[in-house]
Image (cartoon, rainbow, N blue to C red; front, side, top):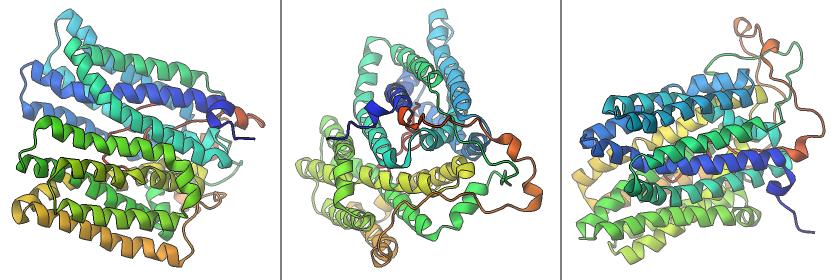
Length: 455
């Protein structure tokens, strides 16, 4: 008999996944609408960029503290509280517009407050996967999450732009409503994380996730490879636009080529279960490394949109299955009491390195030209494949191992007061009717920070 799938058998996952899909779509709509709104209020490009930067910087600064909160508090209550803050903040835009008092400073405040709430929500959402999805359904849950985020990333900007043409405030009204949907579905979830054993020492340091990750060489090597691919992916976005523009390609054609990345992500998400059955993790990452290195080298030789678009689909096609492998390895190997902080450490590594891509590519394009820049990116991927992936093949691959019983015991001065922080336990027998997805990664019942070519 065919497997009915986690969306049918796991009620909490279904609720969480629907909330995530709806709110992620709302996030993608407002993503394109924010700079348009700033410009419509008389602001310039620099002011529009400042709003985006405030949101990004805030999310990065508060991500580690957010992970600590996720490890110490009831995650469902934490997610509901964060979504209430985001709902109120985004809803303030249509309210102020209706009263005739909408101004640029308010948009900066909205970016900072929503960014802070997102930094708190993201690790709680990511770790909730582990609370409500059993081990044998984890890859299926992550695949569904990847599919919904890929679809939202592909469709959301188009819908946001269209809604903005109807009414410039409409995308934010829809965005606020998506948070309300997420809150309702979160409140209906019944699963809770298992309670820590009485007397168990816990490391309550903010950096505990980073410390644990540094002690996992095989996982760290895999994450570094994924981080470098994200760096190259974000760099390739800038290089692609410059490449097409230099050949005289129009804006519509450039947009279609860039949309091919979303098509590849969606197709890859749908094909992920079959791909993961066909390839071992080592074979999958080797295939990605070889394909990316070869494809980026081809980009150095042609500027034809009809070549670049389909090739971009091919390059992105295998990244969703790779993202599932990384997410499954992190969630299954990390100690439960450190899941929030480990997830934020992974996010900072993977997303933080990607943030350097655009500026480094801009310098390379100015310094050495278009074709040499593509060849340099291809060489980076090739070198990373040799260093990080080939050892995986020699060691027999990389698999999501069993979950450790607990983290390494922290220093004595950090161990006090741990048992009282444990969240309520999940009743036996509820696993088959519970589930989830994540905001940061995958992300990540919320909306992920938009990160390019996430692996």
